Length: 126
Image (cartoon, rainbow, N blue to C red; front, side, top):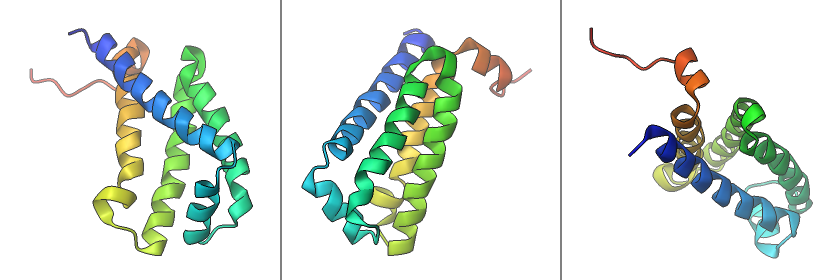
């Protein structure tokens, strides 16, 4: 299977998950307010986070701005990781979840972008 196809699939999975996550925040679903409250944040912060996430996601989904979107999404994931470390969440299911998402975002982008592969070449044996 072609690396570009795998990259597009990884990126599509990341985009679909993040679109769902953004939608529930923008719809101000009660589960978002409950979760934010349990993490020590004001319950009404969900809309603001949803808007920031939407901007990052759109930037990632547009090929010309995908690298900027990936950088901003990485920052967003880092905030989530720091939050889960602060409240003592489980390592593999909560703390590292942002790392898993980052691997999908950057892995998908790396595989589908020849320019990024040229910038960050993989290690090859001589």
